[in-house]
Length: 193
Image 1 (cartoon, rainbow, N blue to C red):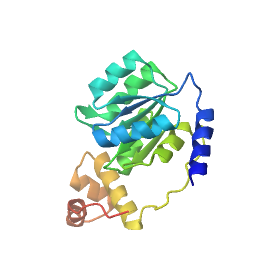
Image 2: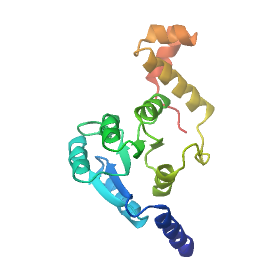
Image 3: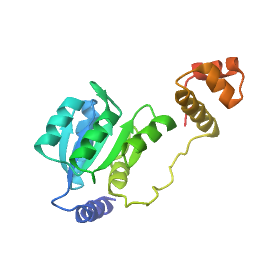
């Protein structure tokens, strides 16, 4: 087991260019950010750590990163707001968005903003690394635990609801669903997995 870990770390260091290995991690969850920073340093990245949008902007003005892992919700704003700023600094930057509140609508927004992937927290360092280093057009591996049909349905309803500017009547009309039924669904928590 330890031998496999050493081999993975060595292979990763080879895959990273020594001049292009700077990673920005912007997350307001200090224990998670610190743990991820340590894990990514072991994988050959030079890590810039930031707990807010403001600190992240200051950090990238000091040293331009090649990669970024951004939490969707930061104390002083949304991680998506940082994507255009980072793209202006380095158009080739590989950006991954993390969130504890995953849904299809926010995943689509992240990719449209310029992120290469969108992962739910807590994300494993190996999964984050794979997303950062994936070649263009390369599909990620299938999830170990894919969403259930109930969860997919709930996600679709949430996406249409957001696209209808959170208008229940318009969402119900577009989904061909009774308004009261839609309201009951919207008042429930998301199904597990």
